[in-house]
Length: 69
Image 1 (cartoon, rainbow, N blue to C red):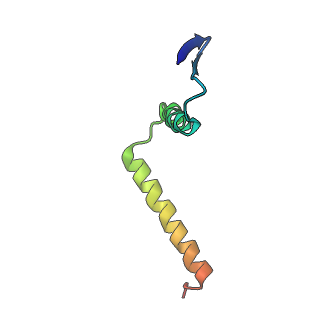
Image 2: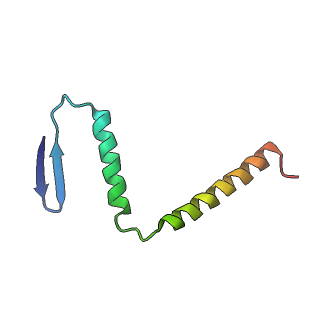
Image 3: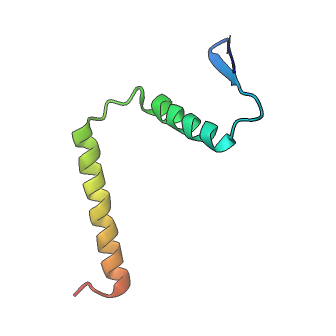
């Protein structure tokens, strides 16, 4: 593995023998960290959003199944 810094990027090179699915899982996590690093959302904010989304999903499902009486 080779790690290089170029301008404001970090390049990582792996040998071809490593499974790409493992590398992709690590890259997905690093992308998540990059995207959320400047977030001001609290865990409580996220919980509220998830609850709201789930409620909307249930309401749509009830409507699709004709359960809205």
